Image (cartoon, rainbow, N blue to C red; front, side, top):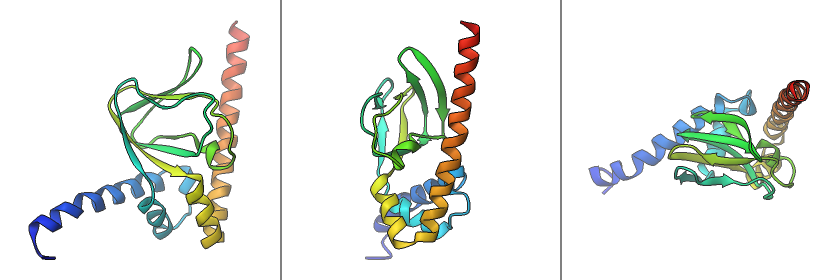
Length: 164
């Protein structure tokens, strides 16, 4: 049975997708200097979800549980009527929810049909307990990403304030 083309093809697409997800995460600053092995182990547990045009991935004010990585399609990040970012394949968002359980500061809405993978806080907690050095590296990377995004947001707000 293990040599049956049916069984081989049935599982090949899952493996191919997991490797694609691993490649995309490793290309982000969150996974900088995290081992391929640890990344793939995390990816094995990451849920993937498809969204239709206009469907909310999450809404401002909801309690966040993790970060999202876009596999296909486009996602718009917004707060109220303001568009903060337009994202596409390989972009990630919602990373603050990996660190703290707090309300989302913006909404994420599918602009096209899209597929998104979730990196959830319990997965990060598990990594920190199993492989503390790799978990600490990932946490340092998260801190850098959040600091950079905070700086960018502050600059955007200052520019908006000056033009009003």
